Each structure stands twice: as C-alpha cells, then as structure tokens.
Amino acid sequence: MLSHREQRPSAPIPPEAVTTPLAETIDPENFTPRLLALLSNALVWRESHELQRRYGLGTNDWRVISAAAIRPGTSAAEVSEFLVLNKAVISKSVNTLVERGLLVLIDGPRRSRPMYLTRAGVEMHDAMLPISMRGQEIILSDLSEDDICRLNHLLRRMLEKTRELQMLENEAQV
Image 1 (cartoon, rainbow, N blue to C red):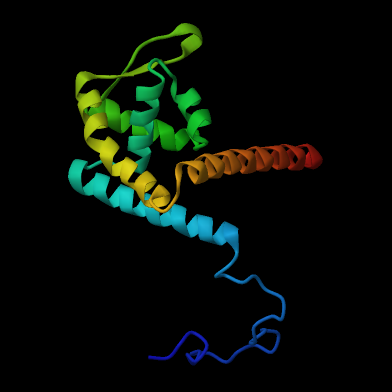
Image 2 (image 1 turned 90 degrees about the vertical axis):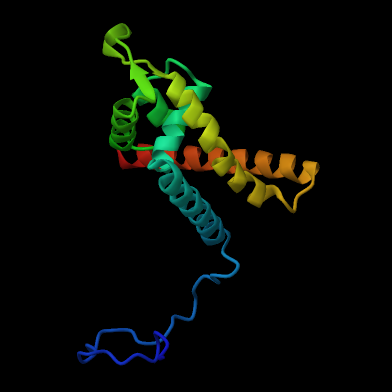
C-alpha cells in the first residue's frame, strides 16, 4: 500500500500547489496541545462507545447526569456554563434524559427550569460512573499522589490562562 506521500493523484497537481513538507512545522510527537487533544479524544471515544453500548446514552448525556448529580436544581444554562458546552447540545441531552425518565424539570424563578435526577437517574448515574472513572484511572495510573496534585494544579492554571486569553481576544475583536 502506498503512503499518503506516494499516492498518485487522479488529477494533475496545479502549479500553485505546494508538494513538499514545509521547513518549519510542529513536531506532532512532541506538540503538547496535540497530545492532550489525542488523549482527550481517545478517552471520550472509549467512554462514549461504552455508554452507548451499555445504556444507549452518550458522553454528553452522561455529562448532564453528572452535573445534575453534583448540582441538583441546576438549569440547562448553568450546566452549559459548567461543562463549557453549547446550549443546544445540553438541550438535546436534557430532552433525551427527560424522555427516558432519568431527569425531571420543574418551573423555577425567572422562567428557569431547575433539573433533578429521578431515582432511575440516580441509578443510571451510579451505573455510568465507573465507566467515566476508568478514564481517570488511565490518566493517573503512572502518577504519584504528588504528581496528581501538581498535574491538576497545572491543568487548572492552564485552563485559567486560556480563559484569560479568550477574554482578551474577544475584547480585541470588539
């Protein structure tokens, strides 16, 4: 089988097409954002595949269940902020969970819709939790307690820096 570089295109290559690798590029094996993204994608895929196979629910559904377990009475908008996910994604999961009888919504102040797990939702949470925790185990398995504390501290700092940078970039666009 030919590699991507050896494959012959079916059409002639236009003269303006650059056909050789650039001199300055990232090293994909040592570019930390890529490695973090690959790890995250692999963990989310594994989790989502297992949740779908066992329970017919996906990772976003699990995230909403988990958020409602952590913060009973939270609204979809608050879950969206907490999870840093699009409100439409959260809304779809909330609707799925309500239809499955795992979540109930009540009328709250200022047209909010506080959500609570049902007893079936609590059972689903408890069944799904070990699948999610397996990702944590994979990440932390080769680390000492001190390493874990340091890693979590560094990750929180990096997240804060990215939020600050995003705010600065948003202000610059205005």
